[in-house]
Amino acid sequence: MNVINHKWIKWAGLTWLVTSIMTVEQLALAKPNGEIESPDPGKTVGERGDWALGLEDMVGGSYNRQTDRASNGEETGNTHYGAYGPSLGRLAADYFVSDRLSLGGSFDAWGNSSDEQSWSYGFDTFGVRTRLGYLVTLGGPQLWLRAGVGYAYYGNSASNPSFGHSSDDHHTLSVSADPALLLPVYHQTFLTISPGFSHEVSFRSQRGEGAYDSRGWGQTVRLGGGVMIFL
Image (cartoon, rainbow, N blue to C red):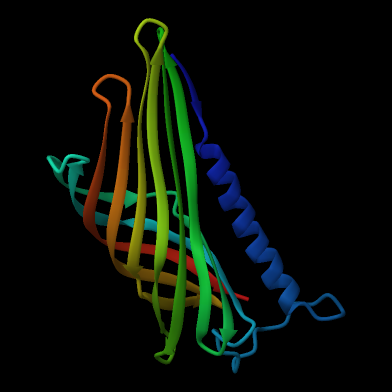
């Protein structure tokens, strides 16, 4: 079996992000003589012009329930599922347009393909979320209230010279609230604990044997942890 795994692309992105954050932070604290100064103890995060960069949902869990109906109104599925553990996370960036008020979002994408005997399989997923946030100072920790909308795609396919090609594509639109508790760990770097809730509308298109189209409604609750740095 020949397997091509594209997760390395995301690991490369993670390495680039961490390296870039460390470099930018060191440059921001560098004096003209090359020495590194201590961060300003009076500096607060979430001021106008600040950026927040990070990785979200590197660890955590989620629970989802969804009901699907075909175009003729017949119920085609009623699913409940949960997931937990570590993951590669989502890249996130937010900009503070004024003190405490932020605009931003997150991005996630990866894929996998494999060949087994005469079959070829593929899997791809992509997601983007936009959000509006407001930062509340609680002394050391910060509470970041955030809400927004998102789009996600999930698809898999299988092909064989004798049986042809089949695919299953899902498109999902969501409205979500995901406040985050920020716990300071170093300079302007924070660990994030983020519970969340979203309501989704999904559109599914299956092609090949047993082809059909359906629409679904569902809800997801989740709890995730990550890391965020303010620049």
